[in-house]
Length: 101
Image (cartoon, rainbow, N blue to C red):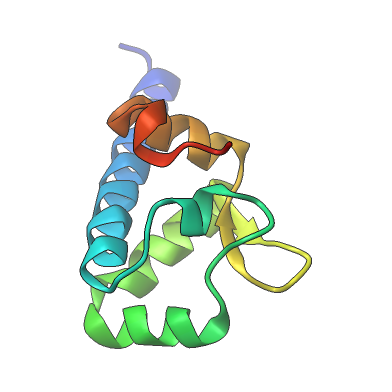
């Protein structure tokens, strides 16, 4: 395995861990995956503060998702997954787990 492949695999593993943790936190706090997979929806700052208060890991995962460009803020300043984040999430949980229709 080349160093670039190893780094990419590590990054994907980290992203997948964060996405999995994010999905569990969303569920436990009454949100659905569509909250972050539908580009015009997203989590507002209040929901983000609640998730941060509920889990010390949230901030780390949020930073990993943002730095890897798997998540961003939409025009309404809400936290959403990018195409990359949605692709990984759907790969992990299946398209039916968070339909964008």
